Picture 1 (cartoon, rainbow, N blue to C red):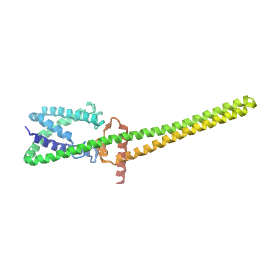
Picture 2: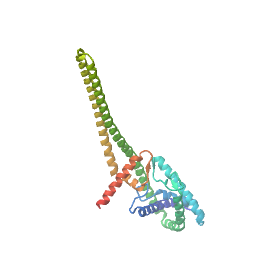
Picture 3: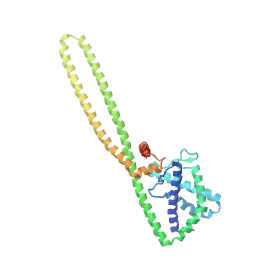
Picture 4: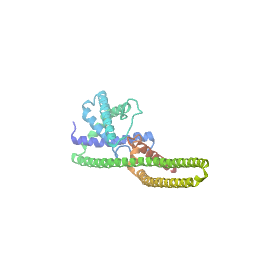
Length: 312
């Protein structure tokens, strides 16, 4: 059995090794470095938690590879399922998605990766964990406690900064969604203004034609009276049209000012490291509320990267 200090040390070590494995796996797949992981530092805590759970629950079974494999597969899959669900509910974002994989559950887990986790845990428990245990026990406990304490402190700071960054990013996504809605409203206002003007013009022409026909049919003595009436109506329609025009222009100016403000926030979002890093680390991330805005930022980042690569 292991002490509480040893479990904490295993958590730190496996969090780092898990991050290394993610970086290597994605570098092979993409051909370039991506800082994988939920946190900014070189750690993936889900790997640390996963291995601590496996070590705690399955150490008595480590000589039975079959039981170790199935036990590891179940434990790590349950952890991944719970983590994905909690992160989605907390931040309204799916950070990974296995929906395109066969035998998946809600996109959180799938059979393919569950098997890989099981095989990986068998390999780690048989080949790597004994060496890590010897290394941890070789370090003097007082020194080890200080090192682990410092690491956990930085973990906590990183977690706080990351959570704050994600919440801020979600607010920026909301702003970008407002930009899209405002642009739609602007086009609607301009289009409806043009349509209303055209309809009013046609209506005025029709009324004038009707009035003209009526004048011809009526006696000459009523001509002056009708002229005054028509002129009064024309003046009234002109004033009403001017008022509508002014109202539309004021509304457009307000929306343009708001659009300019939101566009500036959007540009600042593209300059911030946190959202860019997260979207690179989780290319399949989907926002429940503002996915259209997230996709626009992802496209902008991709276009910017292509431009940078071409300049090189």
